[in-house]
View 1 (cartoon, one colour):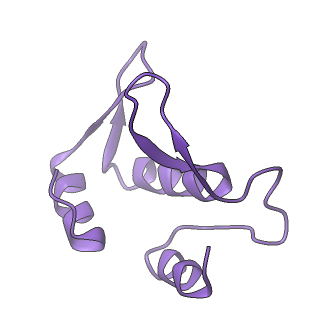
View 2: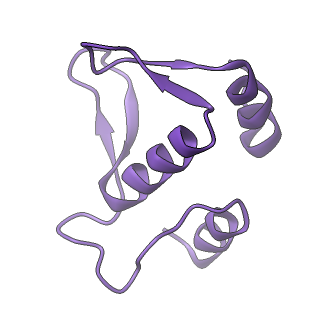
Length: 84
């Protein structure tokens, strides 16, 4: 994670404790079921919590899956230029 990346996440309200990141701070990880990469570690966890708190993602009951809400579609495009 670069300083620029940390500054960006802070600017959009993703809270990271860089002093105590735990065993893995940030690394790519290949999802076992979807076979697509995602962000693992403290950074991925903080980003996930932030998206849930904003109601941009919603958990699918009884599953590890999430759905992207209409607010999430707009927010992800605004933040990352990602079209969902």
